[in-house]
Length: 188
Image (cartoon, rainbow, N blue to C red; front, side, top):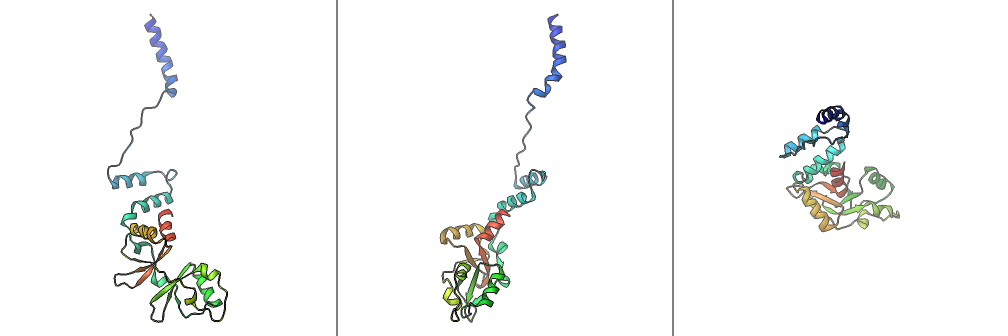
């Protein structure tokens, strides 16, 4: 008799207690390949993983495969200063409007002689004899277009520099790269 009562009681209470029981453990999926992992990221809802988060993950995953040429500013988009240029109002206006913070200084044969940093320009007292060569930093660091981004990190650690001119296979100027550009690639 007690068995029947206990059975009836269990049948009655069991559905009511169901919501308090621990749920069955969900089977966790573990990707086995890079393609599997990318598939998981692509299937993740946007309220969990935003588009910018997806881009950051993709950038981090492809970091070892990327080259300097993938993220540098190309030579055609650079702003140069001739070492004999006067740093008067017109030149300063041109430099500030470019949006860049560093400018290669070249001689008459377009050979790079140094870099002018905007910090030097901010402290500039304009005189009629102030030429670009007076404010340039002769310490120039170089990378190559085919250098991997891992090498860029090594060069940053080695030189503690912010700005790098980029050379092509012929050792000619191809563009420039900054730490900020590297960070933007990884974080944006």
